[in-house]
Image 1: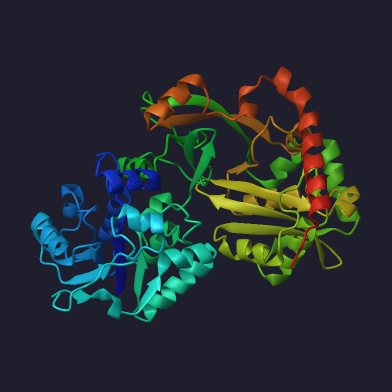
Image 2: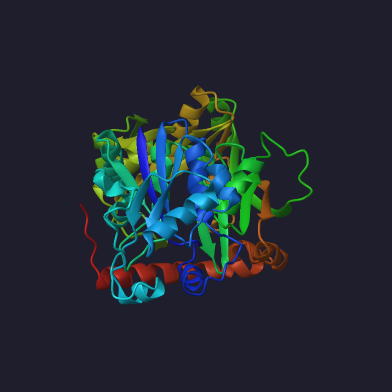
Amino acid sequence: MIKLRIDVDYPYPSRIRSFIFTILGTKIDKDYLKNSKIVARMINETTRQVKTTWFFTPKTIPDNELLNLLNNQRHEVALHVVNKPFAEWKNLERVTGTKVKYYTTHGTERLLGRIMWRRGTAKSPKIPPDFPLISFNQFPTEYLDRTCYSNPPRRALEIAKDAVSEGKVLHFHPIWLFQRGKINHRGPVYETLKEILAVDEELRTIEFQKKNFLKMARDTAEYERDVIPTKKLMGKLEEREVDVFTFLERRWCHTFQDAKSWTKGNDNIALLSITSYDDWWKNIGKKTRNMIRKAEKSGVRTEIAEPNDDLAKGMWKIYNETPIRQGRAFPHYGESLAAVRKSLSSRRNAIYVGAYMQDELVGFTQIIRGDRIAIISQILSLQKHWDKALNNTLIAKTIEVCADQHEQWIMYARMGNHPSLDKFKQSNGFTQFALTRYYVPMTGKGKIAIRLGLQKEIKDSLPRAIKYPLFPVYSWLSRTRVRLRLKLKPRQMF
């Protein structure tokens, strides 16, 4: 049984709006108890056993929408006393039409907070000896929003799971569902709560990104499987206040029948259609075949690599060989061995191809297997062995592995933003495949942004005649930034 205690102190996701409402009592209907409603919906969707006790103040009396969500055995209404225990208790029962059993007190450490709640100098309200409700503080409790503030997500989840197994109550405030409170050291609890309840599977691979004044969302697995903007998904994105949701059409295997209401944009990928390794070998150029032979003559051996600790250590060594690759800053430089191990263990649909010289990993390819496609996610090798054409032989082995697994399509990222890498892809049989990217405005702000074209990346908006001459400048800036950062703060690897 998952036991939750939820203290609904403030009515709005915004702290400022909540403070104004608390002081002036001016109700703004939009977003009233929004985060509480999201939590209630998550609790109602879970298949796990949950018992939730909701503690409401006089400023957070549940409206009809929230009461309808709480209308089942998983929820219990309780009192969060602010100033007047008896009056607040009777009012809560009258408005909600429920019998209240438990209470807690609303404590306020800061003077400004005590003034806002009109409590004078008292940090918490006084409870009369004859008050008939039962204090909820008697139950062992894990303060979830504080745990999520002080620990990384994985550790916070472990602590929460241990607390549940020990029969403890998980306690948090809805205002810290998504945001972080630096002053009072709380939040955000959403990711941990989602895992504990095993809900919101639709959002598992959704990435939220701030782009100027826009909040955009995309599915990070959009190349691996078809993304369908269902009503349920769009509703949950609306809860997260997304302005624009973007997704693409995997046109090599799936097309949308009716997409008239969505704004279209152009996108592309590097795509290779294969029937067999022999056919691929015949179709690539002589120079590429000679490069692959060169690697073999240099003693390079390629094979499928098991995702174990030896592979993690080899990948970590390659990541940290140099801070600059292909003329630009390399994002994995400085990554810890623990982070590499975690990434390796978290991938369930990946195949790894390793290139070895005398049993040392000198290069690797990460292949992600999706629905009717294999995706080359990474292909990296030690720069000190680049004269041995490691990446060419890794591509060859990748093609062989995918052909043996009866994959028809292989994707190798996009084309058009890195001339030298584009040339390498073309020499290995990949061609630019045009895709349609869709943009769904979800707010008025999103509609305006799409009309002005602000949802696109600058590099995708520029014409080639302008973009290509800027690549050397971008690469120089990228190299300069990383060198300056390393000079000011030397890396630490573990």
